[in-house]
Every structure is written in C-alpha cells, then in structure tokens.
Image 1 (tube, rainbow, N blue to C red):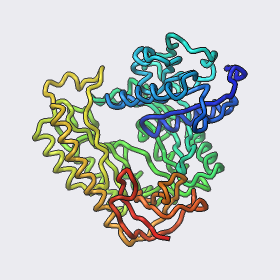
Image 2: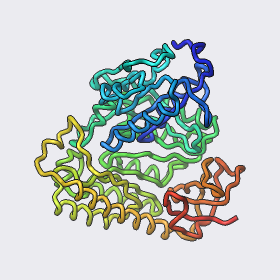
Image 3: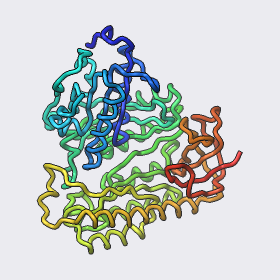
Image 4: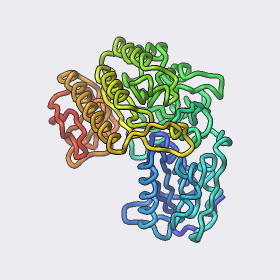
Length: 442
C-alpha cells in the first residue's frame, strides 16, 4: 500500500480516452486514490500523481493516447505518471519508452494501482506491470459520475467474439461480469448519490451473465425496480443479443429509455462475413423495425466501419443503400484502421486511404441528415430533459428520454433535475461543436 506521507500535497490528475467503460473505470481508480487521501488537482496546480487511461481502437486512438501522455507530462513535470487502459495493455513496451512515463499497468493491474505507487522519484525506465491477455479474468465493478450528471455503470467486461478487425478481446480479455446483486447494489448507491440517469456500459453487455449463470434480461428486470433512478440507457448491445424479449421489456419499462445503440459495422452481408460478425443484415433490419413498431419515438444509434480490407466499391454502395433506408437516428462512423494480430490483415483487397476517407465523409453526411430528420419529426412534441452540470457560455444543455439534445438559458438550480419541455426552436448550431438540437427560451 502506498505511503501517502511521501506526497506533499496529495494531488492527482486523471485523464480518460475512449469509451464510456474507460470513464467508469477511471472513476473507480479515482475513488481508490481519494480513499488513500488524494484530492483532484485544480486548474493551475501541479499533481503528484497522473493517471492516463488510454484507448487503442484505431491508429488515431493510439496517437491521441500518446498526445495525452505527453501533454500531462508537460503540465505536471514532477508527477508520477501512470498509464493504463487498452493501449497500455496491448503495447506496454511502446508506452514504457515514452519519456516521462513511470508505470504501465495492464488490464488486471489497473485497479491495484495503490500497491504499485511506491515512490515519488521519476524513473529513467518505466516499470511495466503487464500480463498476457489470456489471463485477463478479473471483473472489477465501476461506477462513474464525477462532473457528469449521468452515471456510467459497468456491468460487463471483455469479449469472446473474434471479429476480424478488432483487438478488444486481446486488450480486455474474455467476457465476464458482476452478479446481478452486486450491480443492483451499485445502482442503489448511485441513487443515494443523487443519480437520475444511469448508462449501462461494457464491452459486450448483451453477453452479461455468462460468468454468473444469469442473463442480461434478468439484469434489466432487476434494475427496473431500483427506486430513485428515473431512467436507464443501454449503452450498446450486439444485434444478435438484442432479443425481442428485451425490446418488449423496454417498451413497457418504468425506467428504461427508448434509446438503443446497436453496432451494425456494415450493411453488406459479404463484409459482415469478412468481419466475422454473428448476424446478417436481415437480422439487424428486423431488430430496428421491431423497435420502431413498439417504440416509434425511439432513438437508434448505429456503429459502422468503412474501408476495411475486402470492401469493394460495390459492397460499400450496397451497404450505403441499406443504411439509407433504415429508420435509424444517427451513425457513429469509424474509418478502418489496420490493427496488429487481427485476421483482417490476411484479406488481400485493400481500400486506399483516400477512398476510405471519401466513404467516411459520405456516411457522415448521411448521419447528419438522419439526425436532423429525427429531430424535426419531434418538433413541437413534449419531452423530459435531464439538465446537465456542464454548460456553454450562457446555455445549459441536456437530453430527453429519447436522446434529443436541448439547450436553455443557464440556471444552476436546474442541474440534475428533470423538466418537461416542448421541443421548439430547432437549430443547426446549438453549441460550438456543431451539435444540433432545440434551444428553449426562458
């Protein structure tokens, strides 16, 4: 255990890249440090310990992780620098060679951070605490909120799928989860801390229960009965694991929001086979249409990858036409990036970087149009918005139950409250980052 008397101010800085799961896990690490006497660093202060939780889903994610590490080292030159997360798990030697890094923690070790922090002295070579991915078998429950109004609850980790483009099974290990009892206890803790909304997170949350002989359907049933939580969102669920039973349940639930995030990855069956996905597009379409039949106002977000090895121009056009006709709300477009130790590298046909970019741009334009159409369909309808703590200048923002973005004049008293509103004054420039939404007047 760390001797916190070494640290003069006991200040920590935490930085997270990547998915909601990473944010939940960073929060758990932060709580451990707080319990050991640390305090979050304020603007302008120098930290004693910096923890960077990294991502490695693409080459760009690797680059952003390195940039964040360098930036934290510049901002806190005397701090003890700890790097963890998927980039650290898959490329520990590469991370350890970055000047200024003191400690690299693998997936199993990240939640034992206190036992590894044993010196304030900067190291000439980073200490690597890293295990082979086959041994990543520990499930550590995590609950995150920090400055966020929404809480992120980790219910599952790892993945047993072997998609040809993906390194997540190597970075996260095999599928595993907490028990329903433990997850419900964390939800009750969140409610006691004032949570109004919880997002369920994991790598493959539909696979929940494999390690405890339970099921995701059993979990959502149990969570629906936790008093104090106004609504839950299902973070992301594979189409082959999104059963009609789950869709029916959400349609009649007391607390689960009409909001689904479903990875498609490609709308072309040839590519789905090359990607080693566990469904064809007909199943995906069936799920989307069933959602819209039972929940016409539901928001449906969809993940898509473009430019993977093997994707011909004809494959992309076929996928584009399929996605265009689907009644979905928004796309999350990922440009394919070659990853070591993946089967996709064995596919001979390669898509040029310029062509990948063009395909990505076309899908981004399609996504923007679908989101605008979805919003306009709900113009002048009522909804319930959860106002968030973060605000842009004179505006505060929040989301309705079906994930429509809303802004209104900032009012501190409204933070973390739910208000019934009417969706009026649609705008294409709600905030500086280009999000669209509805701007309410006083």
